[in-house]
Every structure is written in C-alpha cells, then in structure tokens.
Image (cartoon, rainbow, N blue to C red; front, side, top):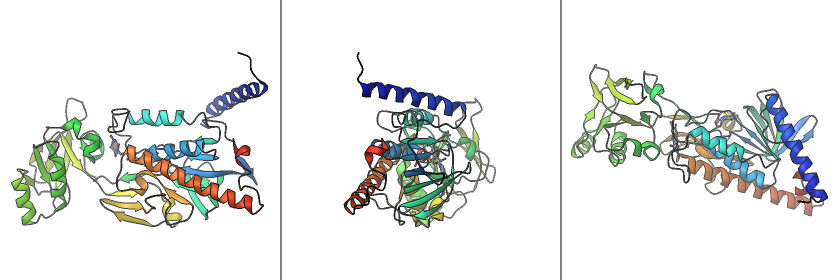
Length: 366
Ligand SMILES: Cc1cc2nc3c(=O)[nH]c(=O)nc-3n(C[C@H](O)[C@H](O)[C@H](O)COP(=O)(O)OP(=O)(O)OC[C@H]3O[C@@H](n4cnc5c(N)ncnc54)[C@H](O)[C@@H]3O)c2cc1C
C-alpha cells in the first residue's frame, strides 16, 4: 500500500520508538515507550506522576495516556496479591495469574508514547497543586502538575509460623476472591472478639463446615450463643501456628492453638490490619483515616478521588476499604478522568487569560 508523507513520518517515528524501547531495555532502564517529556533545569516535567503500577495505577495511566497527558508511571513492583496463584472475580479475566493481568496492563500502554513507565520507586514528594516534585530512587526528580497515589496497602500478618507462608494460598482475606475455591471445605474464620460473628455469618455462605477463632480475645455471651445457634464451634485460645499440607500442594492443613490442641482446616479467612504501603500520602499531609474494616485509608472524594490535598488523587486499595482488582481498576480510571478534567479546565483558563496552555497545548503533547 502506498504511504503518504505523514504515514512515512509515522513509520519512521514508530521505528524510532521501537529502537529506543529496545535500547532502554538493554540499558535496564525499562522505559516501555518513548516518553514525550519536557525538561526544565534538567528536571523532567509531566502533567501527572502516577505512583504505583498495580491495577489502579495502570488503569489511571491508560486513561491519562489516552487523554494525551504526559505521564510518568512509577512501579515499585510489589502488588498486594502477588502471593496468589490466581486472581478471581474480575470480568473477562477470572482465574488469571496476578502478574499476567499486570503484564497485559503494561503492554497496553505501549501505543501511548506520552506515557513513560519506570520500574522505580518514588522516595519523596513535595510541592503543591500545579507544581509537585517527586524524588525517584535513582536520584532523579520529576515535576508534575498533579499526582495520583496508587500505592496500595500492606497487610500486617501475625508474626507466627504459617501466616506469611500460607497468605493467599490457604489464608485468605476475602471470600469474593477465594471463597469459591474452598466452598464446602472445612474452614475457619479468625477475628478479634465479637467481630468474629460478622465474619462467620459471611463465610458460612461458602461452607457450613466452619469454626470461629478468637485468637485469645474475649467473646461476649450473646455472640457465643449466636455462633452456637449457627452450629459454628468457637475456639478462644490464641493461635500458635498454621501448618500447611505435607503433599507440597501449598494449602492449609491445620490450625494449632497455644495449648497444643489443633483443628484440621483447609482454609482460614482472616482480614489483617493494614498500613499504607507508601509514606507519600503522609508526607503530603493527606488525611489518612480508619474506614470500615481498613485501619489506614487515604481519604478521597468518593466521586473525583481527590484527597484532602488539592491536586493529589488516591486510587485503588490505598484510598478505599473496599478492595479488589475491579474496584482498583475503576477508581484508577475515575481519578484519571477527574485529573484530566481539572487540567483541561486549568489549560482553558490559562488560554483565556492569554497565557497559553500550561502544557503548551495538546498538539505539542502527542
Ligand atoms: C493474597 C491476596 C489475594 C488477592 N486476590 C484477589 C483476587 O483474586 N481478586 C481480586 O479482585 N482482588 C484480590 N486481591 C485484592 C487485590 O490484590 C487488590 O485490591 C489490588 O491489588 C489493588 O490494586 P492497587 O493497584 O490499588 O494496589 P497494588 O496492586 O498493591 O499495587 C500498588 C503498587 O504500588 C507500588 N508502590 C507503593 N509505593 C510506591 C512508591 N513509593 N513508588 C512506586 N511504586 C510504589 C507497589 O509496589 C505496588 O506495585 C487480593 C489481595 C491479596 C492480599
């Protein structure tokens, strides 16, 4: 097929992008696509820095890329569900490997040269709306008009044998993610005090062969009676350790209590306390609060995902007590749309005031 001049230019540009991509990979810089970055005093300037490239960050970067924004996407490489063999409940991808989903997400950013992906952590942040500075672990800094924090959370598992080893492979936080796989199996719920009733009421939907573990915490008489009425035996001793199956399949086999007694179980549902995986929200003085079952959530407007600090948006687990791949993807896309909307408004205001777009205009971007 005959090419026009602009098609030729496009072909040359694509070749260049591929070459640059290969070179970057060879150099270990992991830049997925040729960035259209501006520089000021040797500092890279972006419209948006998205911190975290799990589901929420990838989703935000995709929408921002398609909105012709210059984006830097920083990937710390520690997605929360990494210990799991399979990710469940996400429309069209039920049962996919967690890493497979992220690979697809990263691959689908490649057509957008205005999105720069780096396997690098943000180590610090300063500034305010319109002018943030992000310090990268490699020593560089980047400036951005807006920030999206998609930094996820960290589950604080008990420091007792078996919890870490079996996390996501026999010890589960969420029945929507893992309940189907252990339906009708011998299960346990573990929670402090009376909270164990609420968990038991939920988990017995997946299996009636259920016991409640209070891990040494006290239980009210009424709650004990309710659990009894539901045929859920209660174990009030502290859990000493969890033992995995000896056939090497990786699942849970037994819960051993402090007094040496044990109960055979194939799945334990336990929602541990959580911490923010990154201190950036705190550094920026974003309001962080307990919300529902989650101990630390970056407070964000439910509609726009903007935090208590103007120009900073929270997406995914970091900003929500409702946590799943589907919800993280949704909130990443939502944050991105509202970030872009704010930038469009600011650009239009700057144009009307005769100052030109803050970015130099979309045509200059991509
Ligand atoms: C064991 C387990 C199994 C799960 N299974 C399922 C399931 O089957 N289905 C489901 O829907 N949900 C599941 N979930 C929940 C799901 O993993 C989360 O809801 C989802 O990963 C949230 O995405 P996110 O992008 O907000 O956070 P994450 O996926 O945790 O990604 C956050 C990213 O930000 C990075 N980061 C943090 N700080 C920085 C920094 N300073 N600089 C750069 N990067 C940074 C981290 O390294 C990480 O890569 C599971 C969770 C667990 C714990």
